[in-house]
Image: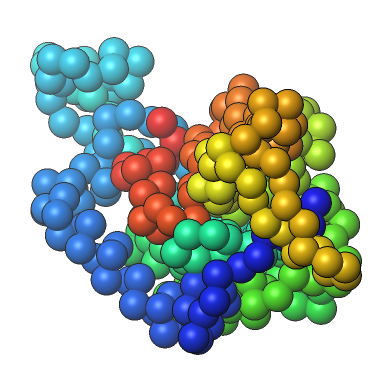
Length: 307
């Protein structure tokens, strides 16, 4: 399908990601942590719920509601009072961003291109990784700089942000699909790692379901599916398009048959991709180009391990 006529723009705002805006998103993560308060930070450090990537920290007296599976039987027998084990996230965990660069992402009708929203969401994931004490790295599908090697601290975050600016500035000439990226990711990930996928819904459906199940096992798995409001809810009116070559054309979206085909091409594909990932136990959210970039942060496990 030909690309819709983009709105006029006096600068690159919303069309290509800028490093300064990705750097500024650190404040969103810091504000979120302040809003949760010291009690939330303590809960992040120690949890009675054990997940993959969690290690034993200490024991305390059993309280109503604690999981009986985590009772510390030795300490209970020694003291005569029930105790439960507390766990904390393993040190040096990896957060890995998986960046789809499908041509469909380099488009948008509201606020920003989907590619820019992907870069912003990825930047927030990188800043959150820093706040959680994780190493952070990034992968894209293809290209000479397809891997940002995982690193700790600000060095790791800055490497990822610079890569997101490069990767989402323009669509690559060749798009081999997500499978090569996922195969590379499986070689890097270890149990307990977190991965965050930034993808076009159609790219997700092109991957066999079993691949997603294998990649989600033993990891904190998050997927953000980038969509545009026009794709999800087109107007019931003629819509003008300008092909790469040729004269301007109009799509008769007021016709029911045309709207059904549009629905099948966009909204149905997004819902099918979301359903596939949910079956694979991936936490998934549609992220529209006009939504607050931080709208997905609720998917993160604040304890640092798996739910």
